[in-house]
Length: 443
Image (cartoon, rainbow, N blue to C red; front, top):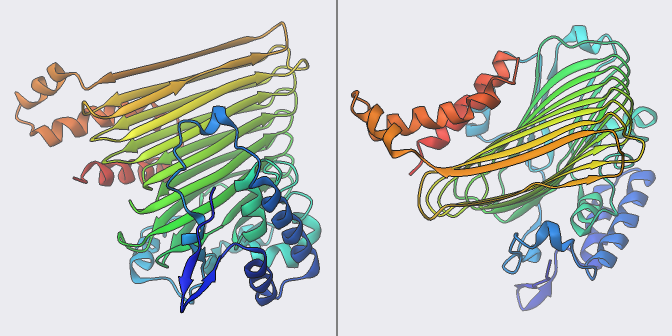
């Protein structure tokens, strides 16, 4: 991550320099405990700038053209642009909904029956202050930690709001929640954060979507997602990444699952010019389970990169990862997956698979599965496939009256169908399917 100066009126200003950070922090007027955490994270960020990134993770992600100082921290927008308001109207069937624009929450709703039972669903900037005792012990302490690398420290210093979901012990949410994280400032840097906490025996479903207010906005998102699932709790989390084609997207995302808990985590990777996501799953208690699903669709010259890790830290744990990639034009998708089993992880059942469907000769998919096993009584397997669209299938469909576009649509739908079938909530499943259909119509 190099530093390039931006010039204005003959002076040089570096948006993420120490003087700029101090001025930005002073203007926020936050409580001392938040400001102190930011200062520590910024000092760590400056230190990590000189520390090489993990070559195994980043060697296929070309950062030579990435210039962080051409972006600037955004000033929070006062209202949601019309395009985003329309999108929200299409999400009226959820039991609660949040809209974040440029790091500020501009709309928040939650069904009263859940609020009365102690559920928190709202803006991180506000709730971390008003419910400090409940939230601070979890915030960037157990899942995503600032010292992971320079991107994590950068985010910890500059995070600007985001989504909080806190579900108390044994409370079950039977209708999904929805969160929209939107960007509306050209050249702005967004650092929104998602923190989900389910206490023992709780359950919830959250669909979160990222989007640009219009297709011409350039921008950067350096985000984080933390999913903390208590003993016997069940969380279904879907993140639909749908930035425009001028966006760069970096994210550290981590889930931790305690004994007998279950996390179903589905990723929809559709947007961004370039994206790199570090996704960790930690199974920390006996009987913990995780199912990780990915629907990736890359077109034009997109580069979408995913580094996933399934860490089995306790006995009798199970993880199942399935990523499905469709690539068109000159797009490239990179997936590097790792199953790690600690010595305590006896009786582990771990599986990972990545399948890629190439719709053009110039598309490229790199799939690198891996295992690191310290226990001696486990079942861990992995697999990866890549291939082009079967021209005979295409010809067969077109001979029966379908256009080439319609035939391609059917093939892509069938390829992604295995992931769709894993999502039991129809409202969430159809939202993801519709987003893929819109992407298929591009170009």
